[in-house]
Image (spheres, one colour):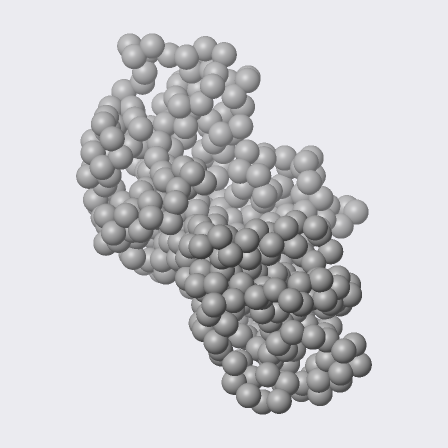
Length: 448
């Protein structure tokens, strides 16, 4: 996990000062009182840290970049100003943000000195392409873009730092940025749109690009650019467009992002077919793998009929109890902890529910997340509050948390007599819907 510190929390760091990279800055004319720091993964932004602006607009970050490369500072909204910079361990930079504009200030690393020059050269066409939908048309954009593009070759010759990795990436960025600004301008709403004969010659060069490696996915607009590039250059269905991409990683990013919007209507079976067809591409980076895993779990938990996790935990007497032990019963699982206020608020309602359904074929199973050091506290609470049901000690890292993606507690889950999921995020005992659901499941079984 990235070690991230806001300046005010500096003393909490266990990372040596020599490794920490630093950003200092001041921001004005922003629509938010916070500034975010992002890394880039699979051509998209991943939040590293966020800090609030001081009264005078000052902000700062200390962070440990796990790998050198481009990072992004700015708003949490893509259309309100986000700005790239390059970091190795120990690098420092100072910037000034004014709305959708940014300048590097003072002495910079060799990498950010080059990036600063590129930012100054291209910032006006960036603003017109990404932000000024209502005020900029092709009449003013095309002449300015053509002027900047004409200076790109000369600029590339100045990229001569001792950092070979940066030189390669920055050279690629000069092409990616121009292509993206040109495409985004053409593909976004404007007061006036150019006819085909009005397009500047630069657009023909975009169709000839094939981006032979994955450097594009190390830049802040990588994922968005791939979609815009294929919409401009390719016709046909998703597979036809995908075949124009040069690498499996590019294809994986395109496939996943193209389908994410429609997954809300997917079944788990749809997901399985999707993964089976495109697995080769979806396994090309840890980030894509995690997104695919999270999507599958979300759909699995949404679908009733999925098999519940066969956990095994000790009860209050130390006897191991497994989920499969309850086959033949409707099961209500409560994941909780003694330190959890909302969990304790549900206990009287849970006890009442148990009493009302005591003659029904249902198992009430409570799994605590308490740490081992608090086991006695757990046992005492069970005794003092005369807690019923089956009380199990899961611990703070128990397998249910990952399998069911439990981020907050209490979490109540209902399973049928076959151990299949009915609802993995059900209503709480304080809500009448839970009792109704349990009775409905019991009724189904009696009707067989």
